[in-house]
Length: 440
Image (cartoon, rainbow, N blue to C red; front, side):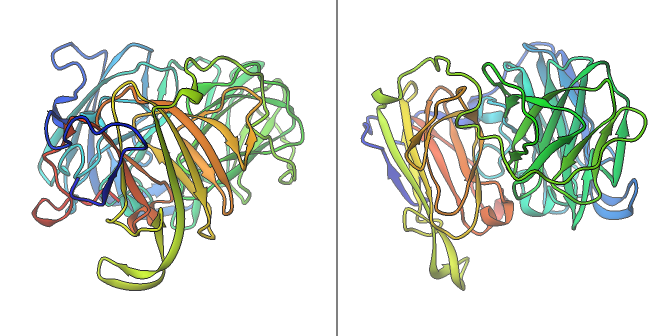
């Protein structure tokens, strides 16, 4: 709380922020035997990108992406992270998984970075079915781009196809491989789980058949309808699941360029990126969300802009601002457990920002003043274009101190970052200084 200023959103400040529970106490089950146990060793080394050649970056168990973690709903997942030789330290963040705060993997907020020769254990229950991923949250703008990431799927089906898109220094890959990649058709239909691990938004489309958008950011879409001749936007950090027929070869377009994913044997159609886009504000059918945003107990604004100023002692013409202030003089959004929260995110910065709140999923209420009319659009990674404004809501049901930042990770490293903090929660961890914690 020495960073910036407290914004209570019209609610109470009944407990002082420096008292109460420490984030390190908000853990997963400490003694239960894990259902899924994984050891991951982080290394700095050369590795091969199939279809492109050798790359100098970072690996987990000598691979990038790291090993795929698969669990059933309700499983206790235990991941032991070992740092072999990363001189700057490392952590693992479970992107989109609403874990207990101590398991969130953010250096300087929920833990110290794991230094060479050290290990750290994460334990959390896979409560929600869906498509997720994991990545380092220590010097993330470098470590993620150079390979420290992997896929996490809760309750997969035999007909699933994974398409994790990642760019290594301008080399776009799918599942770590460059160019046209092929997988066998799993049956007459497939669920294609697309994960965008890059810093910017990506359009995806299907050549050869129609499809349904069946999930966004790990949450099912209510009553999805058939789509043909349209693309879907997957923002940085976001995930979209498509359901489509695979009784004949189909091609998944992944943002353009030579890297595509073909499902099935034989020639697959090669199309161009469609002009029209699926609008998640109106797609699908309405459904109850379980709370009333009109009865919000906290109301916040998150205005993103740019201005002349200093950042880390360096002058700049266009540094990021939040509510008119530069990092670290930015708001700390403070809530109580159980609060209904509404937030308006407005972008006038001149660039797009994929906004990611840890530990929670938000429901989109409106965009540019137009109300959502389709399926509840639950998201943890929201693409906010320049001159766009979104109103979102959520229930504060996961106590802790949570990052709320742009998932264009260079933007976050330049100060487009703040936090959601629960009254009565504190942290013993610190950024920078002797701890060498640098989450972005």
